Image (cartoon, rainbow, N blue to C red):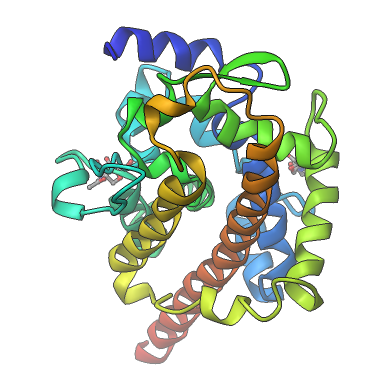
Length: 300
Ligand SMILES: *[C@@H]1O[C@H](CO)[C@@H](O)[C@H](O)[C@H]1NC(C)=O
Ligand SMILES: *[C@@H]1O[C@H](CO)[C@@H](O)[C@H](O)[C@H]1NC(C)=O
């Protein structure tokens, strides 16, 4: 697919639905704010200058809002990693092969985490880093943000409940929106409601037994390896659920029925996991900053 066509698709889908349709990103952020420690919440409320309970949700789509601006253009490639694998027979993310020299979502999570931890940067730059981290942890859990085929499915035309859409959009937005029965205009209230449900699932429901292993390998010192493992996990769904019969077979298909039934649990799982992991990650960041500040105090 020509880059110009890809750009046109990206721009055309901008106002309505941005990566994870905005809705997915905001839900991930609300779930994270349900699980962070109180001291983490107050650290980020201060940094982001928002003392409401929407301090993370309110910045969750910022990275999408700047990626098509002249200033933010360089960040476009940070939203994904294009795995050059061959679904459905073989799925994997290979860092050397798939991460562009200028970066990808894996290096972006590592880079903006280390900037968040850098006391030498002014607060506005650390706040910006926080906004990127909140967003990219969401992106890396969307299977088609870890796949090269047709630009992460942007070039594959399908139908969803009768509407012609591209496959990337279906996984960013349509499936999640259908799960909750449709999302209109400002998605904050709907996202908050969906987050309530998923957070409940994490606390005492269907995700409770899984949430421990979701945090395996979550270590500040290994942010890039951790992000790569997350990317591989999402990418595995490209073979099992996104393109189970390959890229050609899905063209023009109606995905609102059986396909949706199989995909919806994957979206729920990935959104819940992204939110829970983001909470753990922000806890580690806030703890590390608090510790280095108190060490500094002692030295003086
Ligand atoms: C905090 O963020 C929410 C969501 O964007 C917004 O509605 C609210 O006005 C913000 N509050 C402050 C104090 O900025
Ligand atoms: C890290 O982030 C800064 C600030 O946005 C950017 O200038 C730099 O290119 C990034 N580095 C990498 C390796 O992504």
